Length: 257
Ligand code: 13P
Image 1 (cartoon, protein in one colour):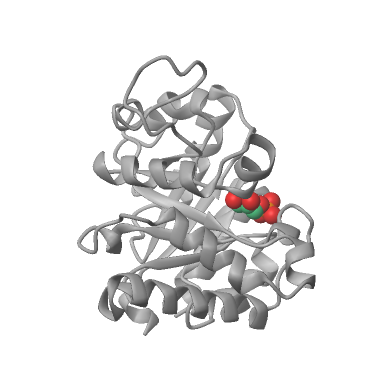
Image 2 (cartoon, helix red, strand yellow):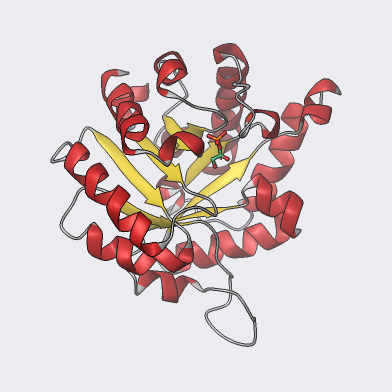
């Protein structure tokens, strides 16, 4: 029953936008979103733009997310950022285990799991990313890969806090390629993830957890994806970098039931 879950559109800006550019984009996004609260909207600028973004979003419905964090609160971890630091900038969400982190920066399931637990402990909502590569899909191991990443990432997560989790299914072959998963391919994996969440946390909780699709989501293909029973929103890269396309996605999520 998707009606239990408010749709969520999250923009992952990746390594794009200076602080000034972020403020300019958010000015348009905040006007476009206005007072609408039928869709939850989150933007995830780079660390260097979080502070100016928090200022630009003050009093708006749009929430602020980060793209990564370290699990320790502080210490000798050059170049890293902790959950309390994000919290102090009014960040509410954090993307964890993005495939770019996993493949380019060596994030393992164990490391991602430590971050998930630290985020929850610090009242940040993790957006945990899972997804298979093209080789894994071709080898028929999609569901095994997703299961390993999901169970590994969520180890030790308490049933009582699980409903605040957000999961993002991002087939790696669809990220930034313009190659979107078919609605059937996406829905199959989303339903599988919800089943796994049911086993981990019970069906009632699993029905409350949003599962986002990510990978070349655009206004043109979003309606069909968002109409699927277990697709509760999108984690959007390229199309989140311009106000028009991002707002069109928010509108598509608002009309999709
Ligand atoms: P694109 O929307 O650019 O394919 O990126 C998806 C993504 O990786 C979001 O986290």
